[in-house]
Image (tube, rainbow, N blue to C red; front, side):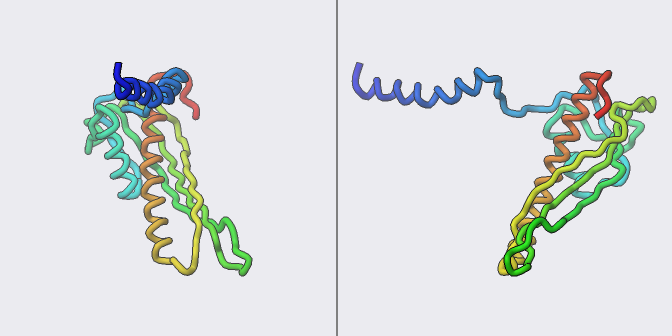
Length: 175
């Protein structure tokens, strides 16, 4: 064997060592959400961005279709309430705001066409802390909008995971 061949094998082993450690501990990347439904209808009054994020998460992360008419769906996801909030987290030494906490809270329930609850009335929320500077107000506004967009996407995925868990284990439907 040449020195170049030995070096390649050694580099391959070094590269595979962390990966084999992750595999042995049970780590795996998030895949598609497994839902035993054919179509889901989104009802209630979600904001247009949340409705779009839920639709995107359903269409890209599952094998389920989004029904426009609730009568065409196996499952109805009823989003009752969505509250966005921003609270002051910290002040600087001069008394100016230096950090905010952004929150989104969504109240929802899921039921089938017969009216049987898959998920009873539940709340799910997410928070993010954001630094603030008066010298970069416009950039901070853009950063806040990006945080809210990412938070809504995370909420949509969490709702789908909760639906998947409730559908797999019907006895444990209280969240």
